[in-house]
Length: 314
Image 1 (tube, helix red, strand yellow):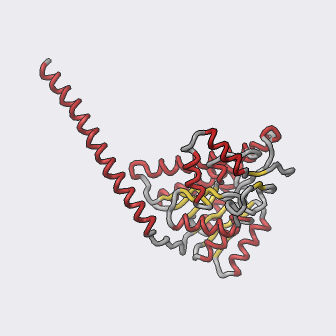
Image 2 (tube, rainbow, N blue to C red):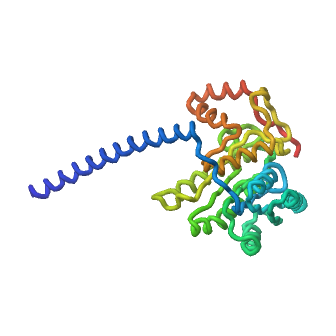
Image 3 (spheres, rainbow, N blue to C red):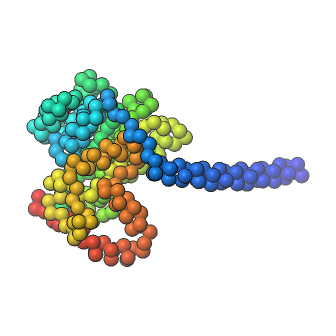
């Protein structure tokens, strides 16, 4: 009895000692990582080269997707362009070719798992395995929640959320086999902060954030796949035509972004392997600050800024 009790006491003491050691390790590691982050903030690492990478861009026929295709190609990447609008997609491919770049175009309804699978098989045969996946395609109906039909909501989630699942399920396995790869999701500032007239859209973009956060943790857990990278992108309003009636009280402080500028910042984020890219970058710190202040103060500030989108007929 006495021997068993002694063993029990020793095990309890051992567990406490182990907990203290783990906590000290956490403090030392956290301090080191903080210093490392500050150092890299002052002295950023060189951007990684993407020459020869096979970059797949969804929604490549228009807006940010088109600019991403052009700019990736200028950096020496081989670009695979996907879009449901074949004519626009072909134009992006042709324009990349005119600049001396390499590009392939495929018509694809990314909301359809079957279509994504069929097109992915063609890409493997024609080009090879994708190494950087950029999920950019999206739709943004702007109207009050009660004016959205069930079909509207279903379609928003098919394009803005489920398409990410289908493309990632196609290409993540090859990333795991290769031990490297990069998934990029173009979300929205609405994936961090909600606004009126965009309830289903905001919901879909929050879902994309959840997907990217979950994938990041799952792939890094226990050092499983440290060289598979994930980048979530959260831009402010972009002049792509999706936001037909933007409302901005202080346009000099929060200007509407160009697709070209967004694409440049996204690629910089990919090359520096950032997990979160807010465009403009000040929105990242604004998002953190807004969640530190009381809810009523936050709402008063949002009312003062009066920024969002008004209802559009289409």
